[in-house]
Image (cartoon, rainbow, N blue to C red; front, side, top):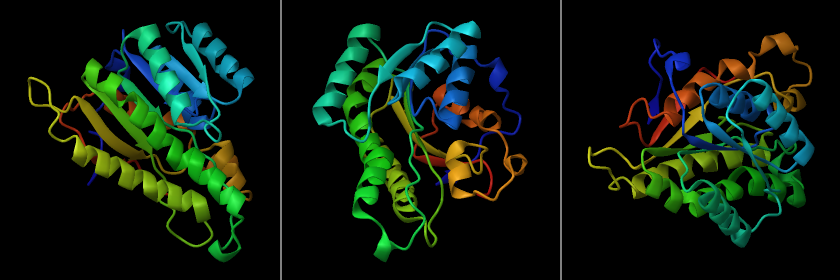
Length: 257
């Protein structure tokens, strides 16, 4: 079911102090913007991505902003396996003892071509990074999120169910199904107030001025799309559990360009 955040929501009035937030794809446009926003609100941000130097750059930006000291969790989502994610979950549990939010921002675009000509290796790579790794991350971390309570998993969507979007479009559609199926399966796991212990939702942020978009829309001027920093309020709304009952929803921020 689609939903929207309240128009009067002000993320700058939110406190994420003492919250642990893991962001995948933390070096990308949206991931980096969200990491900085969460850090500014007091969260300890766990930065995940495959490029260590890029992760360290975001780490330095958070420290320069005065955010709580972040953590780095390098992982190549294309090559990581189920035991790798289990080990990462153990590392998080041993280090922090809790996890309040998992936000899936990692993505690859792949190629713009017809399905009948789509390279199998590229298809496999995109599906692994965009969909399969999100399943593995979530599966590994659900016990820690449930033990923490008042926590959340958020999937980043992009409605691309038209010609030439190939593996990217299919993977994003798959994320919506994964989110909805998971939300339905854990519907009955509630806290003492009757709210979901782990809220499962997705967000479609619409067009953003990112490198990922530039690769898909090479002829578009940068000024034609808003900065990812303008999209992070909805993620803060979900991560901070402003609406404790929000579960199994897809938040639409604007029509996709």
